[in-house]
Length: 102
Image 1 (spheres, rainbow, N blue to C red):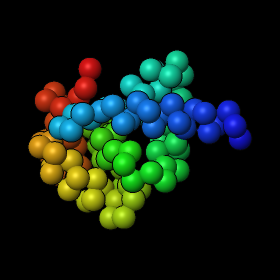
Image 2: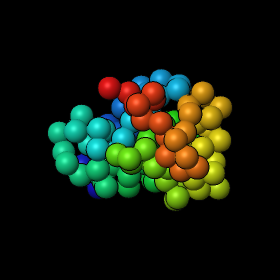
Image 3: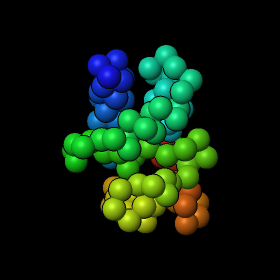
């Protein structure tokens, strides 16, 4: 359990550094942690209990919002991103060409 908690904390540290108006993908975060397990990054975000960690700034590699995002799913994630100036290609996909943190 300690190993998992350490991984989760590392995920949260990265996510807290994503600036407003930008997003990262699960895969980018996994890569920064020297793993290919983007799914585990998602598990960490789903388990987050700290409301100050901006989990809404993480999307899949296509820019798609998470249906399982807390509260109102993708709708809440979109509202939070729009409030930070993030634009979308369609109802569920962030415009990665403008907002992906590189």
